[in-house]
Image 1 (cartoon, rainbow, N blue to C red):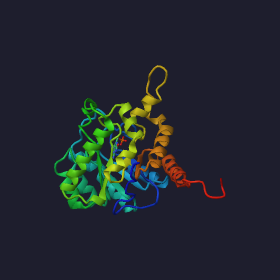
Image 2: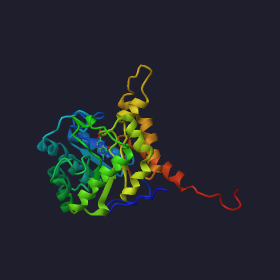
Image 3: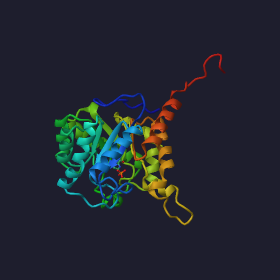
Image 4: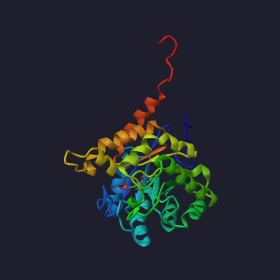
Amino acid sequence: MFSRPPRYVDGLPRPGRALVMGVLNVTPDSFSDGGRYLEPRAALEHGRRLVAEGADLVDVGGESTRPGAARTSPQEETERILPVVTGLVADGVLVSVDTMRATVARAAVHAGAVLVNDVSGGRADPDMLPEVARLATPYVVMHWRAHSHEMQQHTAYGDVVTDVLSELGHQVEAALAAGVDPHRIVVDPGIGFSKTADQNWDVLGRMERLHDLGHPVLIATSRKRFLGALLADESGALRPPDQREDATTATSALAAVSGAWCIRTHSVRPTADAVRVAMRWAAAPRQVEAGRA
Ligand code: PMM
């Protein structure tokens, strides 16, 4: 039997279901929405739309992490996200910042962001963990092996689930050692990061094991390539990102019923519906009540 994860993160909402995090990439090159929201006004409008559709948090990112992506300069990354973070915070939106850089995290938190989502889980920037400890914000530690331009060269595992748990466990230990509050740490297995399609499915299929780390779990499968591969046509051509929505809804429901604390998604409305379905499904009594057999 697996243990259930902690259900809450200090300082964030507790709606009694998985939280829904809407993705807002202020980048020219993200794999599914790159270039659409580079203009701050378009980004703000989209952020508001995500909230109207049911996002509990909006995750604002200024650097693409798609496989093969080159890095953005820290200044450029900050300039992309700051007007968007500031605008959404002014509207009362709970904003998360998707960054691997301490300086960008600090600027966003000073502008009102309430969560730092670091896909490198403290590994890309040595200043990140002490900075998050000082900022005292909730922090997503994602399993990470290498930067985007080379991450798919780092997919060698013994047993992928055991290795991801162990490596993620070390990243969490480093965060704790730097002074990050244990009640503010979230873990994420990094679906699509240094993992083949089959390895992503192995991690998802056994995602309850992640609860053994003792922290709430965030899952982000939205529109990712392994869904495109599963749904490839007869010639082997991947299903394109904008036609992976139903698959994303299915993985969101399964992740929520498996105890995910938060689902990160581009398509908020179906994911928000899926987590409600999952919650209701999981709430059904486990035993037949007397007299109803
Ligand atoms: N994936 C992407 C970006 N940020 N953050 C977390 N915590 N987990 C993820 O798997 C993750 C992430 C991939 O890029 P996208 O923004 O285009 O989905």
